[in-house]
Length: 170
Ligand code: FES
Image (cartoon, rainbow, N blue to C red; front, side):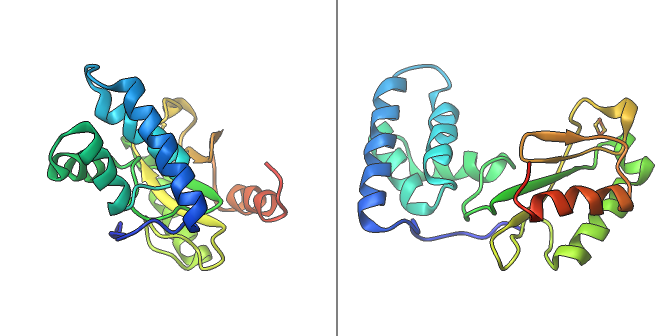
């Protein structure tokens, strides 16, 4: 379950720089159709997550209610109000992956990492999420680590994938 973060965790000078960048993004997208989602994506890229402070900035600069911004952030699973780990693991729980063992993979990862879905390991290394179909259904079950897709995964394969990321590889 995602939690609500009240404020940005960046040091003050980094925060000012990040807020300036977000303001510039808002200027670029101002008055464009569907701009809120684009702005939120860019803001999350800049800050790593979307704490309340960032949502307030966006609502204020775009002249829209904070409830609208917060509603969009909480609706889409790819937005997060808390910082994510260095690597984000997404296990597909779409139908094909679910019936071919996706749930077992998730349970294994929860035990292995000591986290629940949506949480980040204490060392900040991994965030565990679930997703709905990466378009690799023919080679289910599938999971992603950051932008890399791993197909036909099983517990042994997950262990090997992990070693790579633990050692800092990609
Ligand atoms: S259902 Fe998992 S990749 Fe499509």
